[in-house]
Image (cartoon, rainbow, N blue to C red; front, top):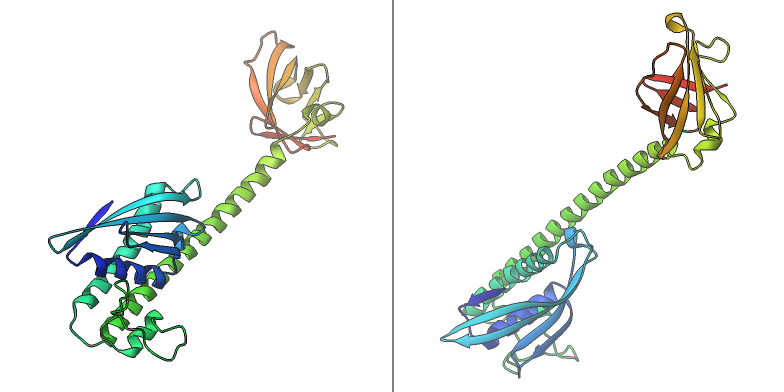
Length: 282
């Protein structure tokens, strides 16, 4: 990913260094021999929990400088694509560098407040570092420029925070959805359907006055009966399909015909759903 700037190379490298500092990037290394700068970009907002080691190579020609971006290594969540991280970090630093470039082209005098903003003091803190001491020093050139940069940083921070709040909100909602879904699935996911199904009578609508009943055996057979529609009894085989789902295959009925196979469902270990009818344990 390349970006051309109408500014001298040394000044552009200096502006990138300042931008890294203001954006709180880490491990910033400037190599004047190879004309490169390397830094660790820290993810915020939607990219929270991610970072990337970025290397920028600079080349100058005819008063223009080209900055070539390369991501050496990235750490990210699987759901966040590499290109998305690159684009996010690229736009973040480019926006600030362009403001600094504009400041570099101003003819205003250097002010102490501006240097203080960038932390460009000597180690003793008693005097201002001469910007001509190093080709990589870039103080801002006016209070107006300083405030513009601070506004950019504040807007960037606010944008990142808003994204983070959105991510947190979505995560909470998604987490609740998964939790509730898990509870529903947990109630119908039976680890041992044999112990739930067998050895009891499943009745409808109540044990005191049943109109229908099912009984399952551990050998994979069942029988059922109902008093409705003149009464009928059935026999057959059952098989566990997992997730509380039971396949029923009929082998004999009192009506001399065999219904089609069907799927019935265990709702927890205390309810059996046959079609739209719920049977309970007796």
